[in-house]
Image 1 (cartoon, protein in one colour):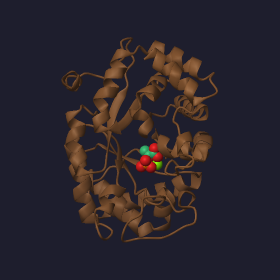
Image 2 (image 1 turned 60 degrees about the vertical axis):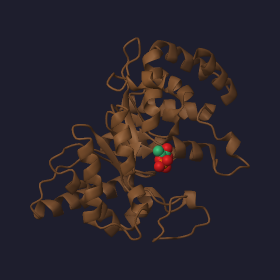
Image 3 (image 1 turned 180 degrees about the vertical axis):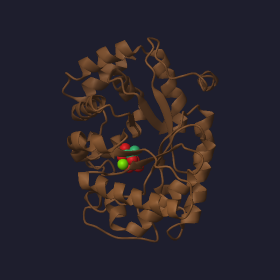
Length: 320
Ligand code: PEP
Ligand code: MG
């Protein structure tokens, strides 16, 4: 079976009835680059930039960051590489910048942290833009957006970074900017956010956590954390529908993208792209190439009528 999956590398993720999904790799470690390419990733859907920050004992300099990002952008030359700005806070803390909060998941996370620490943000943006020089494959992704003004502040900062580099004679181009939709507030704000962004990526891990009010690392409640929870399915379907309405390219980059049962339903929603760990790519591509989108769509319609995740799971298992 494994050999069979490997042979899929150069074949498109195309259903038997002709629906095409793009498959991207999640990465952050240099060691993840070649598995992604080996398994046929069409680009990087999520580069978690906090991972290289965790490998240092100080904030990496612009030069250090530039080298790291450039390696990924070069390895995937000709294919899109979506680099997410620093997403620390919650359970992701840097050993050299510790802070403690009573409710860390509701606190200083993602873009909230970087907007409050402008020099760190500016250094990272300059490194992004310089790393992409001549390659034209960078896309910037913003984590934990929950307000329109965060996006406005970011766009100003990006303009400033572009102007600075331009003034230094560095030939940069302004990359597409997208947001992670992982806080329920962002779902409600999509009509306002849509005109300011170029794409959306659903962060299903955090979206489920905030939608279901569940910490999956808390053993008392973690058994209820489930991507097939009816509220989660409805939320994701709503995002897919809204993005289609606003003509916004959409991908999903949380663990849900690597769960075959969830992928059946995402295929039923006609999601256009999924991003996952490189090692899950062959299995998910095999599934997409096996299951007609029309069958997935019927399954989704039935699943949306079910009140419990176990019923959803049973239904999809039967179809599979
Ligand atoms: C997510 O929240 O689904 C996601 C992909 O981001 P992270 O797991 O890095 O928070
Ligand atoms: Mg997240």
